[in-house]
Image (cartoon, rainbow over all chains, first blue to last red; front, side):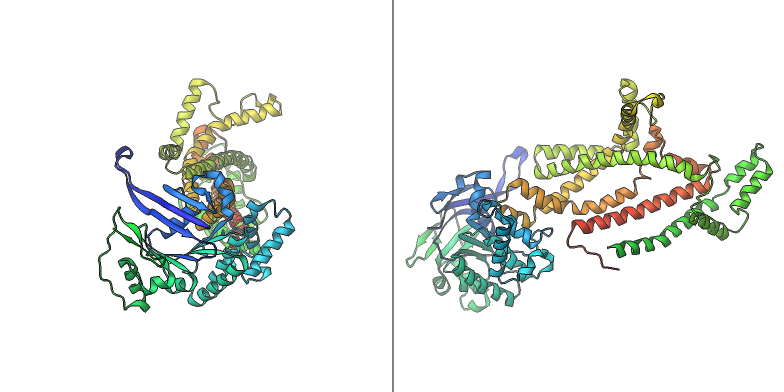
Length: 290
Length: 323
């Protein structure tokens, strides 16, 4: 098991009463359980605001958790605090949604890439070895070597996202979280990046956690799909199982919203309470029920 | 780059001429001139007045007077102060230096205090320290600088801790170098603080706002995800980007260095350019006023150019076309 999430919770305060009493919370992530095997691509789907991105950032501990455990290769990361989490970041990396704001405009690509090696100072002591690593990864994402001394604004969206991917791979991570990584790109570039991700997975033995609302892309790249709604996973099943046999009413609605799946109409109301649990329906198919 | 700078200077010439012309008109269209004061004074002979009239062609049409003045400027003759009875350059030189000293002190103090305060406030957003800083910023923004100067002067008069005005003590000439420096610093304290406090409050808020905006950017998350320690995230990525808009501000600050301190100079008895200009305008000492205006405009233009160059150096996205 590469990564195991147990009952992850992340609440955001929305309103503060007098003297901090009577505070209300948005349950952005509300008790998520998820297990990811090595080499098994998992996708998180759901509408905007359902907690996908919050969940991703919580996994990397880019924001403090409000409960639950993150177990990475048997090690519980949720108990590590502040500075001690930093060394573990090299195992899990992330590519962000917006390639235009995710690269510091003041840094050349060379600096952006080489800075990522901060965690591996021992291994890449010399300037030469850092340069070599940066050039190697730039070629791995099919960008030319002379692009190293350029600034982010000199690249197109697709190229920037390749830089972001190269950056994420600098530390040789095992898990790569792609948070809407292709959503802002046009369809052709999307296709190229998806193809590239497939190549990289074989080359670097990566596992992807793919976050998207684009079902078409998800169907291509993932082995398993988790459908998220209001901070909870409402359905979890192998990819084709979800598409052929959606059990939860929200999953059906999501599928019917995408043009190709118009046939499945929404029938039931979506009910979620605090007592809902994921129920095993066989074939690795889990559904949230009362 | 050099081509760009040259171009900016060429563009500046007509701007300067226009500024000088408008100042000239304003001074001429208000009734009376310094010669009238002289004429009423029996100490001046008719011949002296005539000499001045011919020298500046004051009896000629306006445009001719203006062109004559420009011609003199090109020969680096800025004219003669009627009031002080010496060439304008002689007076402005010393005063300019004094104002420069005060402005620099205030500038260093303002930026040196405001930037760390703003950064601290942003990093502790909505915590008690941030709230404390913001509360005092509001207070200090609302206190006019001349009022603060008066309060400080009053406090100084009660405690005797700091001198009450001027730039040096009466026994300045007898001091050695170290004592001289200390003496000027002591005299600098009150005007500097009075000048700076409001700007610190404002600049601090700008810095805090910029910093918060940058901290919300994805490349900050990305830097954290890379596993960079927090201080690197803040100082390498956040600060460098947050400081950008302030560089433009720096240029404006530079250009207002000479004019911004006038009120405080007058209250604290600091012998600077601002106080000089006020007397010059009131006594219609026209060439002194115009030379000061011109000086201010040149500084304004240099300040803006400096800011643009700094900005290009700091931000790789900004490049100036060649030539």
